[in-house]
Length: 327
Image 1 (cartoon, rainbow, N blue to C red):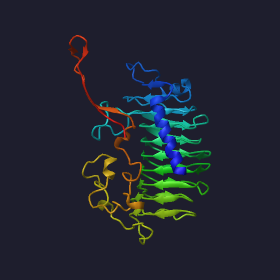
Image 2: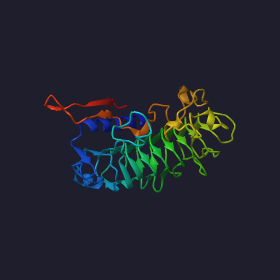
Image 3: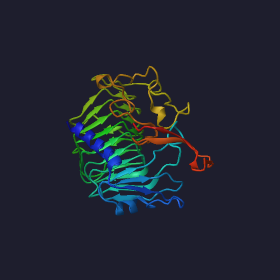
Image 4: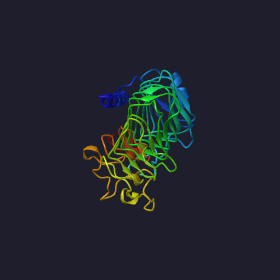
């Protein structure tokens, strides 16, 4: 039931992208003629329920404190590395922190590249972002962290409760304190060099792949089932240990020049195929919310545009665009 409530939250927020009160453009390029140059300005002048589009730019953006319920949308990341992403391959890069503070409950951020995102309130959705650090401060409940490419996901203070962390590619660790629970930690790929890859309490930990020789922490109250691990252990409860990662992923070594996120697709014959709960695939491309390459937001997007600048019949410009529906 709790998972259904969270999924209902993200669905309602995405509906708000289309039917929100105002659409606000942020672009710090001089010729863009956008509504605002910074995300902070957009937040300060927005009203609850507004949608803010942060557009790709050759310059980085400053960080912001988000104090209203907003939907913040960027174009995605690794846009030059995967096929059919965006016609404009510039990302929206916040070289600073996006801090969700009091008043921002119910907000969503997607398609952004951000140095760090900090959450201090309830009901925040972080999805399809490239984030250096996702951190929880104070107390947070009913949050959804899904389909991200992140360095780490952790609590710094307070408790994280009744939340889902799923389908993320994580370089270091997913870590919470002993009073944060219950959580669902599912279908992540956690590399964890030098770290305990998943270190949480009173949580369901399923369908993940951990690539380091360190194993998931067997902490109080955890249910650890159907995970794939490179670490040593005895197979039980659907978990598979001592797995050679070059047999799991299409380009684990990086020698085949897959993009930084596409390399984590499962290769033919992978031991992770069908190894999850109820026969789903382990890893970020399995489960109910599969990872989306380049973090393309769940909206229609133009992935190719040809605009020659020649007048057509004296009434406009001839142009060709190719559009994909969001997923």
